[in-house]
Length: 164
Figure 1 (cartoon, rainbow, N blue to C red):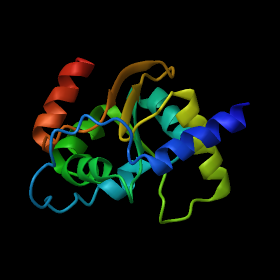
Figure 2 (cartoon, rainbow, N blue to C red):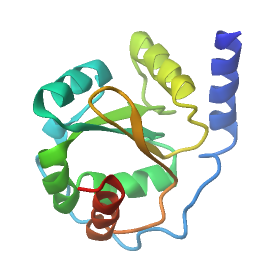
Figure 3 (cartoon, helix red, strand yellow):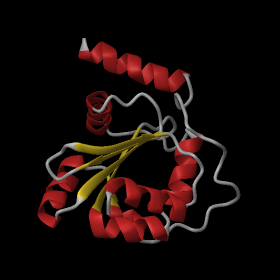
Figure 4 (cartoon, rainbow, N blue to C red):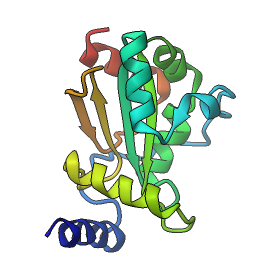
């Protein structure tokens, strides 16, 4: 039954765009260049990020995305998640994890299965979905969609929501 549910979820994602979106318009214009730290700061290994979070007393920030086909996901990535203001904040309190569901680039089968299981576990039914976990793995924040905020405004709002 879980396999059927997982396949159904993926089919819905594949054929319906990004799912319900809170996307009040693109973040307008071209994004600034990505901060070079982004490549080292983002991982696909949730268990390793959770272990680091426990050791460093950080939170785990998970980005469920369709990186190569979902316009709000791509805008969030380009205008926020790889930008200096967000990464400055993340460096202090977040371990960053991306759980990707690409259409045009292949994923290792183990990664694909793990990503599906995580989407099911966290009841992800639209992209982007952002989830923040505490070091014990409890969800402390969830946000769906991308409203077009630039990195500074997005980060300020996230800080407020997380009480940091």
